[in-house]
Image (cartoon, rainbow, N blue to C red; front, side, top):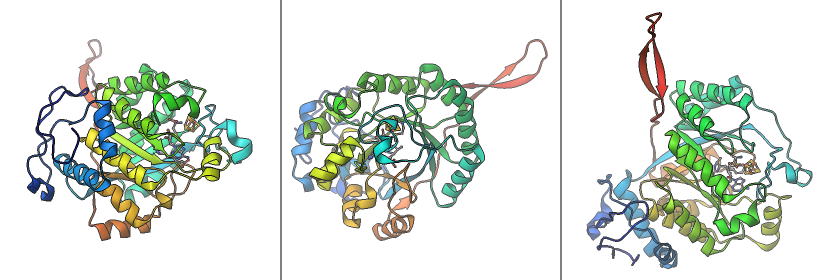
Length: 382
Ligand code: SAM
Ligand code: DTB
Ligand code: SF4
């Protein structure tokens, strides 16, 4: 049973077979420091569905309690996003401003790859404002061979600044994932977006299995996996349950899970439908965050798209639900974000503090050239 403070019996889980007695007593609610990690408590689809059905306050209390067992309370990780190649994407994602398939209606102006020095200048600004991670996104189906040296250079130069790096470039084959890992990339973002069933309504130019293959390639390369969803695209609660279940079926849950609230873009098929018919209740997005937190207790749960339209109170509930990461800065990729001054004020009012960066160092192995006798270093994946 998934009810509040009711989980005492070990149960079977897909990611982790041993399930602990993870909520010890009521006094744990008030603990303000990180506890020893405990195993996830949820594994089956039925358990996920039961969580979604809980009274909201019970769900929030359970999510915040579990959050405090795995993370330092009141601490948030902050990232800044930059679009390094905008628009004219060959994919037809029904929500996306950047798809070339919708460009006649969205009128989004496409841009070529941004020069390395401009990206580095943006990363320096992000660091100066207190971001610990710099995320670079490109509107590609996948990076081409000639794009690889460019993205490798970006990773190395951004890491030199002491920032964590994240990229989202579309599909990756195993060799490309290894190249990014060797350069020291910390996170790769690649969202499943929704359930396998609803995915067919969202995009036709690639399959759910294409997405899962790239996620496997990223996982095997040693890069941290960032994979999330979009809620409010017209999907049902069953689809949101199935999306959470997909995360639990992975060999290891993603380290970072963005829970995007659809930004309805006029001119996209899904955006137009939502603008005409009305969007999902924000409380259902908050529920999705809380269930994600409970099911993936050691993952960062990220507030992503959709914050610009939310009140302070709605965002506070999202933090209560266990979100502990968000995007800073006035722009996401092509759409607006909550203002930085507003975020700073909200953090002060809520007593939230920023987490420091901890970039993943590429593993270096000293190698001796047998002929010349020169020593050099070889980069190893994790
Ligand atoms: N092209 C790459 C890909 O699709 O993986 C990376 C960029 S893509 C814009 C990154 C993610 O942003 C998408 O997977 C989707 O989850 C999210 N996203 C895009 N447009 C959005 C919108 N209008 N509202 C909410 N999330 C959106
Ligand atoms: C993610 O899940 N959300 C971010 C990040 N990964 C790349 C992107 C949000 C994009 C919102 C729409 C836009 O700005 O174009
Ligand atoms: Fe392209 Fe990514 Fe937008 Fe889909 S979500 S159209 S892949 S940029």
